[in-house]
Every structure is written in structure tokens, then in C-alpha cells.
Length: 167
Image (cartoon, rainbow, N blue to C red; front, side, top):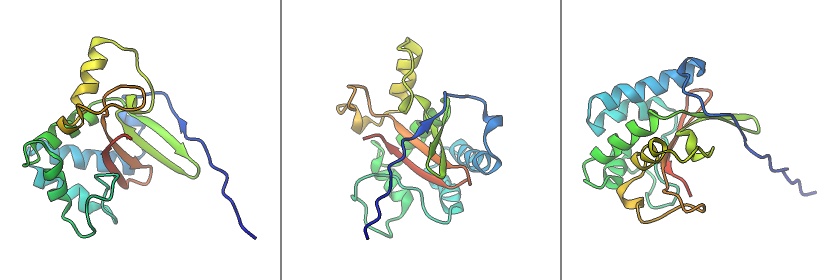
């Protein structure tokens, strides 16, 4: 007998900027990432990366082989090759409101909220969206013709799952 799983649609909350509503484990890794970003050195991200049992995913495609140093991946993805672009984008992403995504039994918190929930097209929102886009992604747009922002996803148990651009 073949079992099929019923696909569950994501339930996405309204955007929120209230960090006090984050579960304690999510707030802890969020703060570790921010502390690393304050050092302005991509190498400092090794602490929150290694805090996970498994490493966060930094690219959806299989372009990086197993065992590749995550800091080297972040440097390679950065336009400058040193990770400065990555740091700036991650700061911009985490400065945005977030959404809570319920996907079956899993709950994720994702920044920026506008990657999942459309926002009004104000000048401020447009500038915020562009600040979250890698230089390498400027020429590519998503299905709606908008820039492809980088996103950070952290599960409710505090596991940092990803930092990547949308499909």
C-alpha cells in the first residue's frame, strides 16, 4: 500500500516588528546573529552557524559540496568576495518585520516579512526591499517581477535553517 501525504498550505501571519513575541530560542539565535553582525567580520558568523546542530543552508541549489566551509560560501556569494555584502544584506534583512509561518507541525519565523506577505509599494518599502537583494540577483526577478530578497528562516526551536534568496 502506498501512502500519500496531503500537502499542507503554509499559514503565514501578518508581519510583525515585535521581537518580544519571538519564542525564547528564536530570540536567542536572532541575538547571536546580530551580535556577530556588529563585529563587521563575516568570520564572526561562525558562532551562530556552529550553534546549530546542523548548518544553515545558504543556497538552494546544489552548488556547494558537503563539507564546504560555510564562511567560504558566504564570502563566495558576496560581490566583494570578502563577505561585506553578505553582512550588509543580513543586517538589512533582520532589520525588517518578520512573519510566522506554520507549515504542518513546523513553525518558522522568517525575515523579511515582505518575502512572504506583499507590502504596499511605498518608497520606503521599495528601498527596504532593494537593500535585501544581492548584487548578483539584481538582474533576476521573482515570479511577480520583483527583486529576489535574501531571507533568514529560524524554526521555533531556535534552529537557524537558511539564509538564501527566494525562488
